[in-house]
Image 1 (spheres, rainbow, N blue to C red):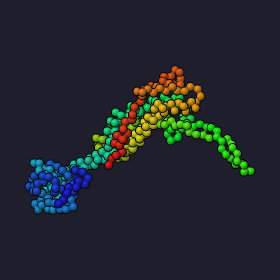
Image 2: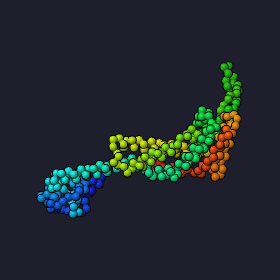
Image 3: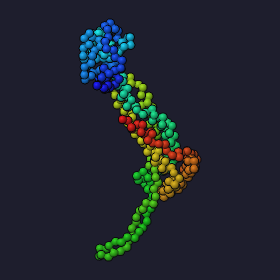
Image 4: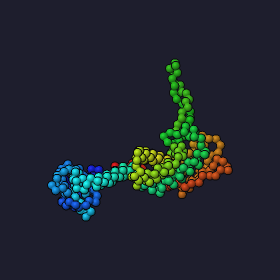
Length: 320
């Protein structure tokens, strides 16, 4: 027994005789309405239109004006309906096939964009805005070069120098004690790499997602290199979302009470003069003083926890 094989779409079938509701014989003079699909099987099927019901493997499933459907060999279609009608029906069918092919390509390209956009708007845009405001409030106090010099693996490394006694051997073989200066790590300010990133990752990703989602229902606009451009936009969105998640994670690490205390310890060791006043309440209300006495302090509310990142990035990266 043969099985239905849908090779590329609902408009192209490989087992035409297994379609439901086929009429075995169609009388001459019956008017066709449309070609439902094109078929190409690997076994002979019976033409319902010609007098000899010629066995064939290529043809069309035809819907008639009276509602019946039947199989018609590719040559019989021209003989039975006339060349002009057969060509018109085939052109309409080909247009449907092309449209569905475009929709499939487009669906893969924009897959997950609309859902990701909803999650971005509901869960992440405010998180990014809050942490970006906090980072800007810290950065008005910082020299970027000093910060970069002390950054290691995304954290600020706090060190101190001290003298220790070490043994040394002189040229004449005597062992003596001498002083040596060593540097040791006394603490780390976690997540400090967020201070180097002020970009609106999610804000930019939102624009790309809006464009992808907007194209989801526009297969007619896929011409030339449109798909390549949309795929490039999708890759750019994924990079931006990934960058936004990395920023949010590091900022969430940095803006914790004990971590901020460690940051202030580092700051006092690197800068002379005034030190920022940072207050973080139990409700995650953050206040950062401004170095200019006339400047306004930074005030923002930080999230207690970050939303689930997999819900956001997974929609764009888990295509089959």
